[in-house]
Structures are given as structure tokens and as C-alpha cells.
Image 1 (spheres, rainbow, N blue to C red):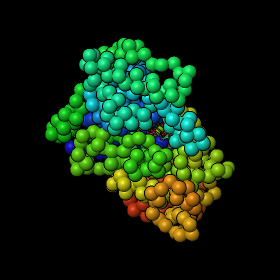
Image 2: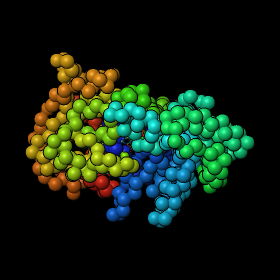
Image 3: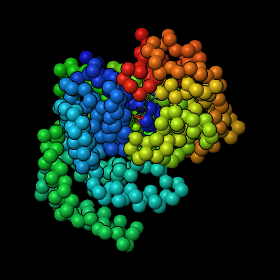
Image 4: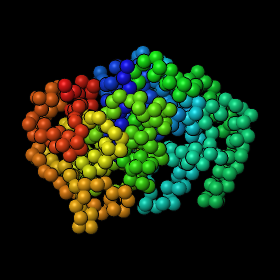
Length: 426
Ligand code: GDP
Ligand code: IMO
Ligand code: MG
């Protein structure tokens, strides 16, 4: 039996989906435990590309139970569309369980988010506009929250929607007097129809996971977003609204942290960030554009160009320590192959002081000047290499520097999007 967790250590999009897909064949159960359809996880094999958002990446391998656990926020329409899109492509959806404790995203969540983001103007968080933050806000606030299990209690649901929507309409109208109010009956009918279709999947996933642990099943936890987007430990307020570092696994699944045998921290060989907030190593020049072009760095969910820069060992090391990783998976190393030299940020200078600590305030991070260690590039196509020892010495030196600065071993290296383009350390 083994319980493995895969978490991103940067600002998301570290290629977690690829690693989860690769490790799925060693596990019986794959679990998503946070976020919602703000996530976009890409898996490529056999010349096909699959983009998963709410469904766990384990869905692509037959014989695996996929679990969408308590900490996920669910847009039922998006969920059903994703299931249909996969079925249409010939993917047979096996056992797929959805927590009855998971909170539900409604159209008013998107409307509220649009208004709140607009009012922040230039200082917008740059969210994915999927109603994620506003749904989590209602979860924590409790009085407006509706969970998956509530969809199967019609009297309760109708009353709750009537109360909540009256309040939401008042708030939204205050921001925009011409706003077209939401109708509780319409939303009740729409969501009851979704609930009917999802009924075979909805259950107590926490009890399921506890039984799976007791029966010695192997479980793989699939992180979404990344450690630096964590609501408590990330670059607040430019974060997502859940615990997207390793800290969120217990919270979002009900499986205790001590059950996890192996925590793999996934990092890109450089840095990307979508949305607002500081990013000290961002390159607003031709090297940044080169990385964006070579890595096809455009958001999976929103299509926005990702901000690109050098690898930041201060930020990523912090993400690794918060998440409590055992080893690193370094992804997209091939993207740097054409550069004459490559740099890694090993410390910041903030107000004239050198530090390797990650600042707790976004304003301090915004003025942090990266101090770089420059290394020679390898200037060679590495996408066909399948053994770590066959990598050019400069590429190995680059990986060794990441391991040295983060103080965690590199266990997996990826040199292309396909399943095959992956190397494992002995
Ligand atoms: P996730 O959200 O962490 O699962 O990552 P995304 O899927 O949003 O972004 C990762 C992107 O990198 C996807 O387009 C992958 O197909 C691609 N990818 C994964 N590994 C590699 C790699 O080693 N090299 C290259 N060039 N692309 C990769
Ligand atoms: P995966 O799982 C990259 C970012 C958004 C925004 C902030 C808050 O594919 O790595 P939200 O809609 O969550 O309230 O947006 O978080 N963000 C992501 N960035 N990858 C993701 O997911 C992200 N999910 C949210 O761009 O800056
Ligand atoms: Mg992504």
C-alpha cells in the first residue's frame, strides 16, 4: 500500500496533471481535494491531448476509482460537460465519486466575482472568473452555502435558494442598478436536473477513503494550483481561496496527513504565473517571450499569456517546505534548451538586505530584487533523452543546483509533454 501526493510548488501549472497521470497506474484511487474548474491539467499520450479541469487526471486510466473530495467546489454544469466531452472521445468513465460535503458553485458566484474583480481595477487578483473565491467565501461564511448533499433535499434547497438569492440580488443590484436579478425557481429547476444526473456519483467520499485506507488500497492525491497560491501561505491576496499547498490534503479530503507516505513537489524548470501579484523573477523581455513561446505558456483555462521568468529557488524552496515534500519533479526542462545561459534566483535583496526567506507581505515581495546564479546553457535538444545520465552535463548541473538550493532531491525530470518523455532517478 502506498499513499502518494502530488503538489505544485510554484504558482500553478507546474505540469501536475502529467505526473498524476504517470503515477496513476501504481494506484487504486486518485483524489482531487481542492479548487474547482479554475484548474487546467494537461495529459498527453498516444498523440492525443486531454485537458482536465474538475475531474481527477486518473480518469484517463481504466480500473481506477476517481474521487472528487470534500474540499473541491463544484460547478455541476461544468462537471457534466467535462464528463460528456471525455465520453465523446471514447474515454470510459469508471468509478467516479463526488463528495456530498463539497460546496456547489451557482451562477450568482460568477456574477459576484465579476463585480468584485472589476471594482479592484488595476489591482485585480486576476481570477479565472469561475466563481471559485465567491463559493469558498460562502462556505466559510456558512449562511449562504449549499453543498452537494443539499441538492437532494428539495424542500430545504428551494427554501435556501429563495433566501440566498434574495440577498444576492440585493447585493448585485447595489453594485449595478440595471442588473437582471436571478430567479430562485429557475435555478432550483436547473440544479435539480444536474443533481439527478450526478446522483449515481454523489456519496460520503470521506468514509470511502477511510475504508480504502483500512483495506490497504493505494491512493494518489492530485493537487491543484500551487503552494504559492495557498490562501494561508501564498502571496496573499493574490492567491486562490483554498489551501493549495500540501497543507490542503488533510483539510480537503479527510485523510490525515500521517497517512501520506510520499509527497512529490512538482516544479517547472523556470517560473510562470497567471493573474496579478508579484513575481520577482518575471522577465519582461525577449528571454521571457522566448520561454513563453517554447513552453507554449498560455493558460489552459482562460487562454491568458502566462508571465514567465527564471527559476526562483527562494519562492519554490518556501513552497516545498510549506508543503513538506520528499522529492522534486522538475518539468519542462526542454523549454530552456536553446538559451546560451540560464539563471536561478538564490536570494532576494529587499531594502538593501540580502535574504533567502520568502517575504510574508506582497508589498515586500514586489520590491524584492532577485540575486541570480548564472549557469551555462546546454544548447542541445533533450526531448529524446530517456536516462538522466544521458542529459548534457550543463543540464545536470542545472538540476543539481535546484536540488542544492531547495535541499530536496530531484526524483523525476520531464523533457516533453508526452508520458514517454519522463525520467526517474534510481
Ligand atoms: P498543471 O495545471 O500543473 O497540470 O499544468 P498545465 O497542464 O496547466 O500546464 C503544463 C503544460 O506543460 C501542459 O501544456 C503540458 O502538456 C506541458 N508539459 C508537461 N510536461 C512538459 C515538459 O516536460 N516539456 C514541455 N515542453 N511541456 C510539458
Ligand atoms: P492549475 O491546477 C495557475 C490563479 C488565477 C489567479 C488566482 C485566483 O491548473 O495549476 P481563482 O479563480 O482561483 O480565484 O484565481 O489563482 N489560478 C491558477 N493559476 N494554475 C491554476 O490551476 C490556477 N488556479 C487559479 O490565475 O491569479
Ligand atoms: Mg494548469
